[in-house]
Length: 414
Ligand SMILES: [Zn+2]
Image (cartoon, rainbow, N blue to C red; front, side, top):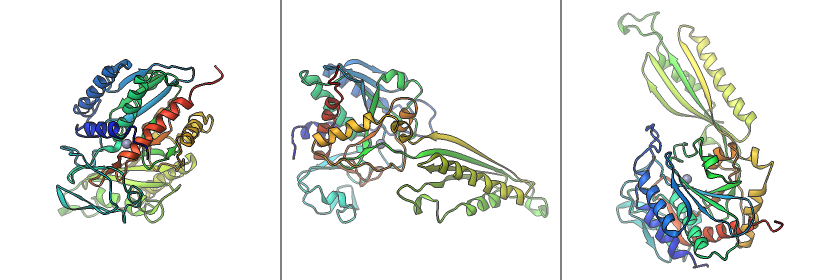
């Protein structure tokens, strides 16, 4: 087991995880929360202190920096996001390290009901002897994606202090608001200036992900007819009743997140608000193929049309908006970044695994915008909740893998 980067990557994770940097989907500012700037400014300062070039915190909340190249080759981008998920308490994170994990269930100091058991989470059973980082029981840990930040910062420090190591120019980017789908703004691809890039935002050791969902969002608005209920007979059209019909007609037993896996897509209602006069239903549509995504949109429109036909006095609209696309559509035209990651994992003695991501990453948007960006492992597990954990030694291996990766990108023919 490698030890070279254990201490540094652990200390960095603990330092970054202790800074609250949760994002907020209901905010319209960029970054969505001021507190994300606390971590962004810390990283800006650390990069300056390390002697990185072109260190910059952009007005849209991304920290950019350059590690000047020592050898010819393409410009490689390395990205991680600083925000943590809004789904669970992220205030007052108290990271702690369990040295030399013994294989038993892990308990939490601030929540006696909580238990992290290798029976329930088999990946933990593979980590006997590792140093395991968790939160204290009342918050998430934020290894998603501060493990990625710690890995990239450790690799950057190593490259900057060992200029004899051969690598092309590297561009670093630490982004806000990934968890609310707003991590990649219109200026990032040009400001990053990379030929291709990698996000360190994946899970188990060896994961190299280059397929994500293709995603659309849908908003259904149902307008009824409002009348005093005392004399509503033959006149009232209740929007709630019609919205309930739409929900009941969704393919709940074949095409919902809770009944699909692998390469299957779904239609998922994420929210429903309103009253008898007007109802709004928000949905997300997911599929790995454009054809499948299109079919799901068509199905949703047909359901709305059928309910509309059953009650002509109502007004039902269905608006479908593109969100992100499967990065494979672009990557399969040029597999260079994926092939380099495979080569680096072999050199690092890892078994590469590529599983389609049932979600999207900052890389999905970046790839679509012209910067091919596969996603790489960090070791993080059980993200977005109080059982989140990561092995120090897994992060250390990801750091070594990152160093192999930038060395593999050197162009020997130049
Ligand atoms: Zn993440």
